[in-house]
Length: 258
Image (cartoon, rainbow, N blue to C red; front, side, top):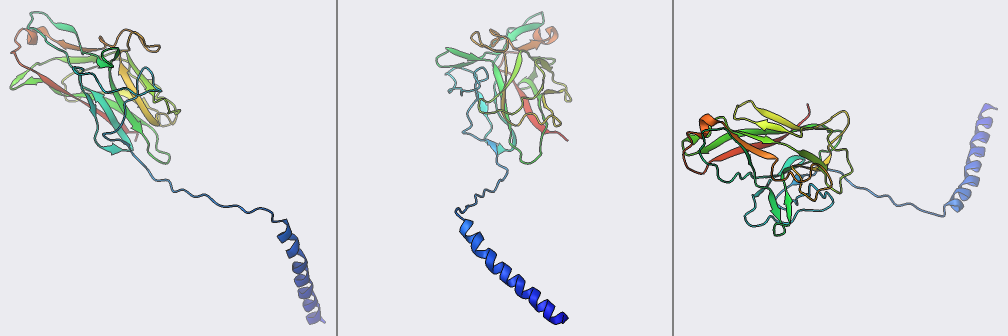
């Protein structure tokens, strides 16, 4: 009797499946296709990278005018990278018995001199996953030198700093930006210029920071593009300077948060 009961149950189950199958088939009036994409960590930077206009972030800056300070573009690519910065040209300085100050770097010039911009630094963070947070730093890694002559004690001061996101970038702008700082020749005098908060998930994408804004700027401090990067030489050095062309080196770095 038990065997017959099991056989009947199995038969009923088979019949039930047979009656449901046509109903399911008749209800299938659409068919889905799947889309697939594999995400890998890419890079930013490289010789073809354009420069975001720090006063009009939705546009790009054209090539610099002849005679304008040079723009340095990082030829490398990376997921956390300093893409661009500008050279600083202070013109001529005469020997002096006094401290030399208020000697400012020439602003960047574009479109036949009709567009001026202060010195700038541009960077990008395109790290994948939950990688957030970094600092952008500046350091005077070589004092002004000409042959064996050095402008000892000289400093470079930056002011009117303003950081903006590239026009296509809707991520949070780093909230901690040093609008002013001074670089000296001390080996350990590395200044943190920008801090993107790891906890707040700031600073992804591309950003540019300018020092000084033009007369036409609607942001920052207009009319400061030619007085925001200052060279200072102490009197003791200024009175002993030897004629020549002196070169210094500022190193900009970007470092991931620990």
